[in-house]
Image (cartoon, chains in turn orange, blue):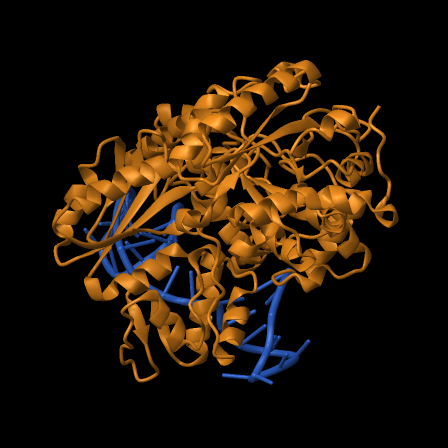
Length: 593
DNA sequence: GCCGTTTTCGGCCCGACTGTTTTCAGTCG
């Protein structure tokens, strides 16, 4: 059983235990264990083999034994025992908003209901309202929840949620009663997908602010509204939460609602260790005296930590690091910023499956003030995407020569996104690859190869002297499909050895390589290229999503190739080719045709 | 079930809103 299946299974065990009425702490242990495994990146098989699973914080003896059994044999006695506690289909009922474990349990025990369909029927037959603790309104809430569940599927992509968030943010910014307003939650932390949108506003008049919030365009439904908290559902099916506090409370509220939950739990524990109290309204010392918290920095400073960038707040060791930096008298290192981007590689045009012409794309790159622009259409095997024949590649070079004259201030680089063929070779003969400025090597076929075979295939491509960039390394599509099975640790080592730039594909459906590999990537000294994989002019804007993920990886501008000066960049693109050309470095080199 | 410079027991973050109730449990974040 692979890692993502185990993560899912542990979370389900937590939910089953919850419905069955187990200790809430045991429930939380499964949920936190599942999240801990999800946020940990490394080779799980190796960890299991070395019997080191408990080295992941949040996973102790009990969970590690379940994980070991599942990873090695696919079955676990403990897991089977938990699963037998309640019928599996009840987990579906938990997805209905407003229905938690207690209500699901009551509905099942009293009425024998097992599925969403049965629950819906029971609501129509007005059976639910007869149960203790339920009434007519609960039936309506459930029916509405079922309807929404069928219509919308949980989390959303940054490209969608970002637009919705901006709409609400602007509506609040226009309200004169608002003192400060900021985006919080997972969007501020640059998570790759978003469950709902969190906004924090400060004011002396919460009523006016609430009214401005509820007057925002595109609200399907108001789910709750109170003195300090309101929640609506947008037309796109995304929940939007607004928390309203006083100006003095803004910093602690922003910190609190930015999260993550795990980060906040650790931070509050740190306050408790001092006999202090921290919540969204402030920070109090042991004598119950409020401490000055004018901004987020001061909250961390009181707790003897340097200020931690929002993207890093996942409780993955950042608090320990902030403590060390604080005692060393240093600051958190600067993370890469959008304004530092000088250009990019891996953009498509109408030469293959892009929607804009090469000229239009180049024009847009020049208008953005970029120093360089790399075009990389699909290679010839990608027939589905209009991949270029060798002849077309040569014709494209003629157009690029022309554009270079028209846009002298922009350096235009001619590349290709070459399919990695099933045997690991690239899609053109060496002499054709040699004519190009760079090659993005990507897998677009045979996703279901066995792990070792897929790893070997990609390794061969990475060791090809013409490979400059490893494109969208795992091929995942967020909310659609997992990446192909591969040995990521091994392949990152290969990329480091060969000097291959690892792509951070900034398309909001991909955001691949996953940010959780950030630490490994930094340890190996790998250079990351943030590439929009743009198929249109608007697609170039996706770089901003990529920068957010790079910040989440903890990267500085030095580690992101497309923030570099032109000369350094050009030099970097040829490094691999020259390295590989040296006889002592010729390892597993391919002979394309 | 996890954790630990109060370490093998006894804690485990904390507050808002809703709906069903007449003071609170359940859900959510």
